[in-house]
Image (cartoon, rainbow, N blue to C red; front, side, top):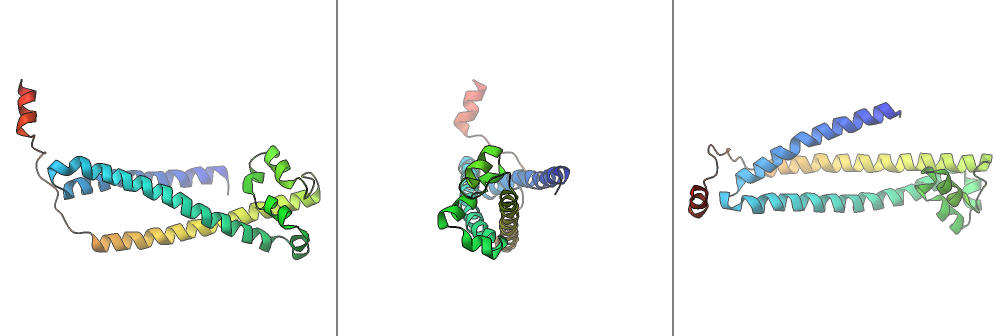
Length: 177
């Protein structure tokens, strides 16, 4: 996938998510009593943060587990069986794709990074990482669709308020003073 395609896809996802956040905030604020607006908004932000942290942890562990098994499946059987557990653990580190120093550190003791064997290992790491990321995106997409359907079915219809929140009497007196 080319760089412009990646940038285009990120922009589409960002625009799609970006327009939904204010809508959800308004829906939550509209569904609670006016004196609870701050609590509702902060709770929404808290759950967004917790969801993000848990999502990264869960999908990161799925990525890591699927990366190792994908790498073993992609490597030719005679090469994969010839690796010691320590050598395979070194190869199952996607940091090799980040920079030349990472490549040298990962391939140290397995193959020369500039040799055909080193190129084979790096290509296997790239393919395994692509396969693992593909699985994570498919799973997250399916989970998002299921969650949206569930939330839409459970969401009750609350008409928007027609007036601005009224100030508490003591707040109004301090503004007039």
